[in-house]
Length: 345
Image 1 (tube, rainbow, N blue to C red):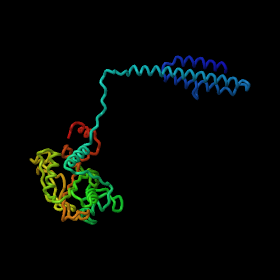
Image 2: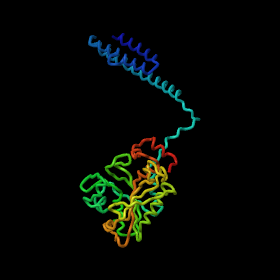
Image 3: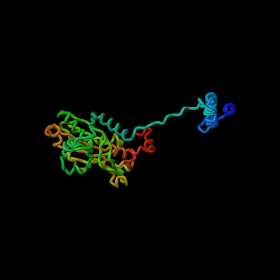
Image 4: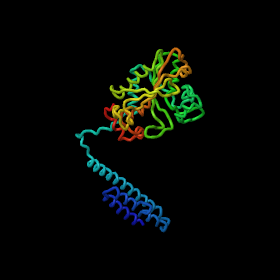
């Protein structure tokens, strides 16, 4: 057995020194030192040896194992260094080549338009207000002249998250909170952009979308002030040649109420499929603040008046940028978002 151990050591060391690849070296390790390797096979014969010989042979076997493991580790370091040098040589970098520019991001079209809207109204002296997205029924409906069981609630299918607690269906509750905070002081000029939630889902509606509402309260405010404000706004968004049209409508929190149309962005009023040959596209709702809403928020409708308006930022983005399906704004499709990497305004 002693001769077998010495022969195994000699042959294995020669094989290790001759190995030219890491894979070949691993095969040698398994053949010599693995569970089914040659050294294990020799050690299994230890039981047939005389008891007085076993300690000496055991020491010799351990010495052989240590020598082979040392030789394997040394050769592995050599082969790894050789492979690394070969890999570096193959992947040599030409430092004279121009660098690779990292990918450039883009502001999402909704956020781009939201910032533009905020800049327009900040330039007219408005403040920007914010409020909670999980809102009390009182602020979302009651304080806006929409009491319980009012039929106007059917127009805004609602996500309730508790008793009289819901995901806001519009940003109008922020107007109520701003009026309460002002405690009857005028002038009050504010907009409140943010996310709102309704149970809608089709090509032009989303269960979650962005809205911005505006509110002005002061002495002597009239419908003419509202029209002039909105005309300035749409011309800043769509160009100086844009026009608006006001049509009578109904909202519980304004009186009188109007729907506001703009010239079709596809045909400039000539009539096409987009505007259904009318030449106009509905863009927002507005009106004079209802006296009841003023009273509930601490204002005297006999002394002051005001106007309010609300529009969907998503809707305006679709018209401004020619997006035909609202889902494109929320699916994170890079083919859509990459169009906004340039100087698109």
